[in-house]
Image 1: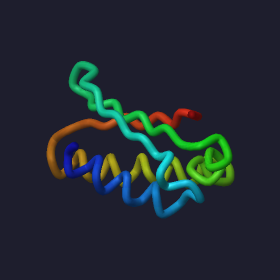
Image 2: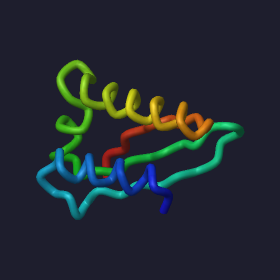
Image 3: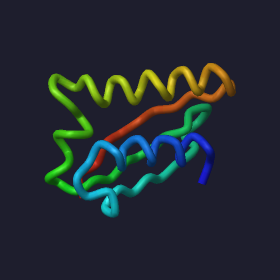
Image 4: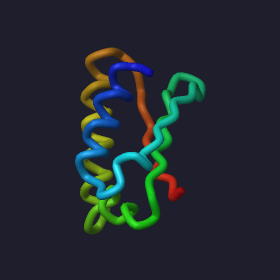
Length: 80
């Protein structure tokens, strides 16, 4: 697991009520790293946030990390 994934997992686990159900996968899609986050259905709203603010903030953090390393990240939230 990459350093970015480890940091992102820690942030998401702090947001949810069921941290053991958080699953992250990373996949190369062209020049982008696709990160898929699976959370319990009861925690989906907490990760997305009101009007998508929380997930937008997570994407901004990944954008900043990507600028530091020269890697592009895309974040998708999955229910499961």
